[in-house]
Length: 137
Image 1 (cartoon, rainbow, N blue to C red):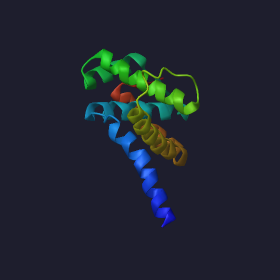
Image 2 (cartoon, rainbow, N blue to C red):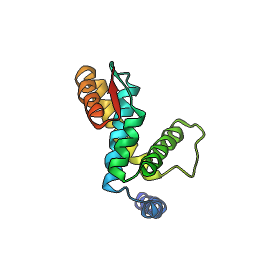
Image 3 (cartoon, rainbow, N blue to C red):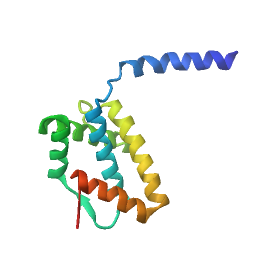
Image 4 (cartoon, rainbow, N blue to C red):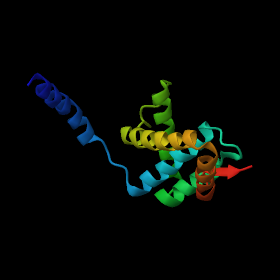
């Protein structure tokens, strides 16, 4: 009985915060997935790939409707990374839903990159190149 009450109390504390959290649009979720995937490729130092900043903004602008919207998502992603790492970040740019979604994607891709470095680097790196967030050198 005590465990059941503890679980209910915990849900009561968590649920209001989640109910108030904004949802990502499909376009935001797609762009964020591409950003987190490209970040994982770079973090795992996949040979032959580097960031394509201008391409990333163009991709985001195409998906989100404007360069400003793309930069807002890039800044929210940056704030999420800094918050996760315990670094200072601009709380005005932090979005919990971005942090959660990016974290899930990053961990999924990173796991694949660790399990099959050669195959996953090629697959995710080529995907990042096709989307414009990465470029090959």
